[in-house]
Length: 77
Image (cartoon, rainbow, N blue to C red):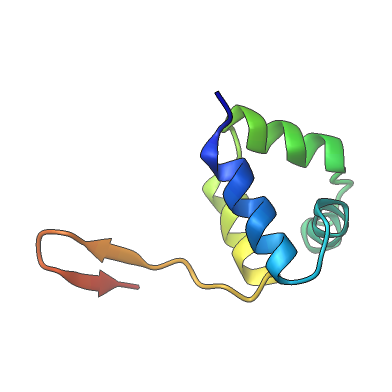
């Protein structure tokens, strides 16, 4: 079974008219180290991508991660 994060990131990237290759290149520039499409794809497939990397992806794609408190029915930033 595919990890749903892979499909979600692919959709977000496509919505910004980018490719995963382009995303990996920008991530490498921002992190100051080589970041390949293969390593990004593997992390997404395996579900081993870190929260820091997810936050960076959101920043690059101009999204914000927001938590929704189901108990209090309100957003937490």
